[in-house]
Length: 242
Image 1 (cartoon, rainbow, N blue to C red):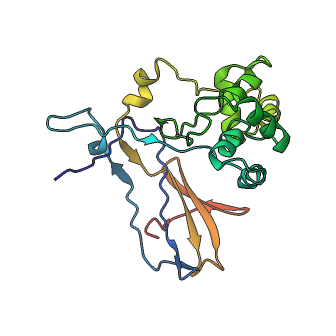
Image 2: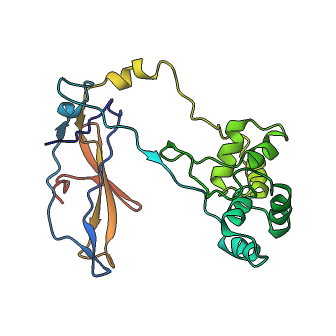
C-alpha cells in the first residue's frame, strides 16, 4: 500500500494559520459553533522533511498535455469556407489573438505543410507550462524581448500577441523567472526550528456571517493588547479558545 507524505523543507519566521469556521450549507454561509483551543506554544519540528528515506520513492513530475484555448467562433468561420477542421485549428493555434484575415492568409501559405491535416497534438511539458506557436514568440522577440519574457507575456494574455505587447510594456520590472538567492538554503531562517510562540490572533465576534465584528489581539512586552477599531487596551483574558 502506497502512502504519500508531505513535509516542510524549511520553516518561515512567522507562521500564519487560518481557522476556517465559515462554511456553505446549501449555498447558505454559516459560522461553525465550535471552539478552537489555540496553544501558546506550537512545535511542528516533526513535520520537517529530511530527504528521501529508505523504502521511499519520489512521485514522478506531472505533465500537462493541454493546448491554449482556441477561439471556436474563429474556427467555425474558417470551416464555413469549406476548410477541414484540423486545418482551421492549426490556423487559429498559430495565430492566437489574431483575426480571420490573418488565419486565412496563414492557411493559404501553409497548404503544402506535411502536417497540415494532422490533428493538433499537445506538447508535453511540466505542469503549469504552456507552449505557444513559434511565430507568436518570434513576433515578440523581434521587438527585442527575450524568449522567457515573450512566453511569460503570452501566458498572461492567453496567447494574444497584441495584448502580450501591452503587457510587456506595462510590466517592465517584472522578472520572467523568479529570482533565486543562491545562498537561500543556507540562511538562518531556513535552519530555524519549527517551534513557534503565539504572537497575535484575529477573532470574529458574532454568531453568523451576516453580523459581528473583527478584533485583534497582539502580544507586546508579555502583555496582550486588544485592538478594536480605535480602542486599544490591555486584555486581561484574551479569547484564545474561540
